[in-house]
Length: 303
Image (cartoon, rainbow, N blue to C red; front, side, top):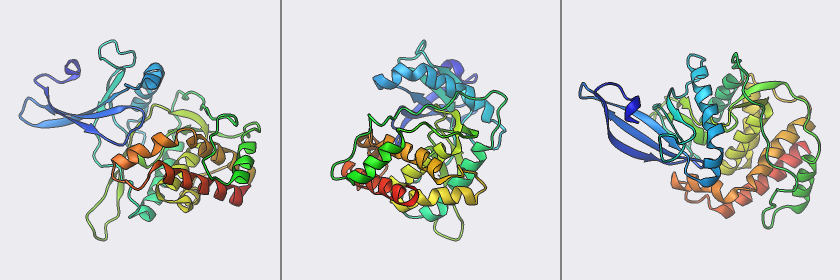
């Protein structure tokens, strides 16, 4: 890390940052030559699965972060990247630190959802000179894991939806993991002031695809964090903010169900960072129950 610091600087402290699933995150406090400090953030892939895919993921983020500078979307600045662990023990990326914090509490969600929607509309409006890679959807009808005691009929119908070919779409610049855990807020003390978004992080999955896919992903996260009604509400907020979704209900259903079903394969890992952040009540069982309720609500609303 010291090779990428300014003259006279050195690392004087580190702090683990919680809330992520795919990587270890650390805030590095840098002592400056003038006696002050500044912060950087180090992303490190240590899980064997993500180490295997780290080169592609970190090269994507290293390429995207400079494109976002001055584009109207607040994101970290790239300092250095080591996608193949040529210099670090594990594949890593060093970036600037953004102010703000993730907010996952139920309290205040009604004020944050419109802000999230407007931020996602701004991301989808980006038109970089070089288009990112096409989106990847790994879930298949054969890999879905139906939760215990789930509504079997609703899940069978949802699985049948993603057996069909993907509907046509107009491509957009996608974050691909846009959700409350990757959005930083400045939350004022109790009073009339409203929160504001200070930045969006974790751009390793950036790709090109349907806006519905990003909306679906944030909707599923909101449904599991705050209840199924908030998952359905986010799509409305996105359109109210000027976003455009698929015109046909059947097309929307395809993307939204595809994302929700993807969570069934990793439900045990999804709730862990939320519990670490203070949402102790979001046990694996609670997350499963909310996922079942959300899939059922999607099928009732659009199926």
